[in-house]
Length: 127
Image (tube, rainbow, N blue to C red; front, side, top):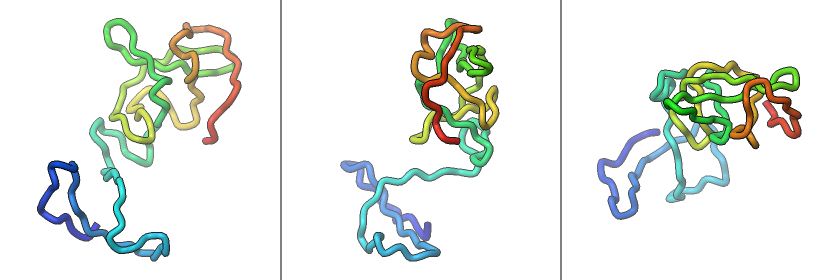
C-alpha cells in the first residue's frame, strides 16, 4: 500500500487507498474497485500468519461451559480435541492452539460426533 487517503465514505463504509504493485498485471486497471482484507503478521489472537491452522467454521463445536473443540480424525476414529480460537477470517476459523498443520478434522456431521466415534473420511481438502 502506498497511502491511505484520509477520508472515509460512511454511507458506503469505504476508505480510499492507493496501492502499487511490484509485478504489473494487465487485469488490474486504474480506478478499479476491490474488496480487500489487510492481514498483519500476527493477527489478533497471537497466531503468526505463516503458522496458523485454519479450519472451516463448521468444524468447531462449542460445548457447555464455552469450551471450543474440534474432532480430529485418526485411524478411523474421532478424537475430541480442545482448541483455543483465534480470529475468524474470510479463509475460515484460525485455531490458535490445539491443532497442528496437516491434522484432519471432521467438518460435516461434526456436531453429532463423540470421542471415539467411528469415522469414514469421504472427502479431504487438499493441504
